[in-house]
Amino acid sequence: MNKSNHRSPFAIVGRLIVLVKPMLPVMLAAIVMGVAGHFCATFITILGGFGILRALGLASPVRTVGTAFACILVFALLRGVLRYAEQASNHYIAFKLLALIRDKVFGALRRLTPAKLEGRDRGDLISLITADIEALEVFYAHTISPICIAFICVIGMTGFVGSWHILPALVLLAGYLLVGVALPVWSAKRGDKVAREYREKLEQKVHDLLEDSQIDDNRIAAEVVLFSDKICNDEETVRLRSHIHGMRKILDENEGVGRKMDFMAQEMNREANTILSKSNDLIVSNAAIDLKTEIEKIREQIQNIE
Image (cartoon, rainbow, N blue to C red; front, side, top):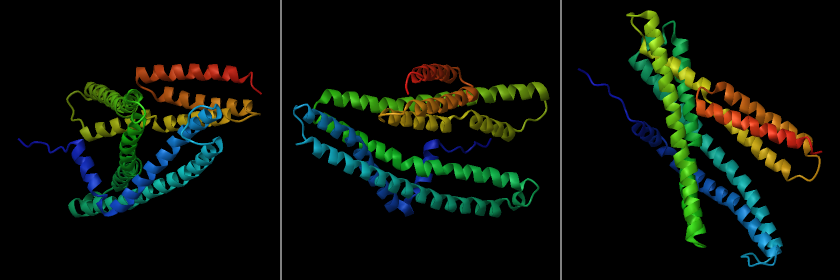
């Protein structure tokens, strides 16, 4: 009996990372710029705190409030430039490697299964393969260097805080591990569980309808992929975070913020509605309902603001 030759996720990731080797200098540059930009963003807040301490006449590493303000301005400008350069480098790597992978995949198809590229369903096949290849952009542009940047920054910030006191450093490290490791792992397992349960239900329904007829496993797998894409709320979550960031910026303005905040709350509510409508998981649905409740509370308070 032939054993199926399934590669582990780690083996697949390893092979994908190997492809970056020709562009390693660009990747290293993106990581360095990302780390520098992250520290710039972090120390804007730290310098602001030092400036407040100096303004209150308390002990502070900065000599004057003006020095703190000047450093904040410089770091803010550097953050923008470094962030842009990092993203440009990551997408340059991604687009180059996507072209390379696309060429290798279609070259292998032409060599191994030329009939598939000449058949009636060749359009569907090419579209499916192209979509899978394009999905790798997220891996190359938004996964490899951000993980390296996060790892270096966690060590750097934990060491920086630890130089003042070990207890807050440990609390900070625990927070990093919770947000950066525990929650993503939990979320991924929940997503896998939902997709697996959907596949089992789908297979059972197909068996009930077709009884002893042969079932195409590839078709079921394709349906599960479509279902997973349908319930995916990554885009809504990203937009929701952007709206929250925009709301915070509006709160820093001095006047005429009521209408802007009301509009931003409407956008946040729209994203929450979309997440709720897409959700097929009870925990996510309950979280979306709680989110909508909090947004409605915010909108009620906004009515009292001009």
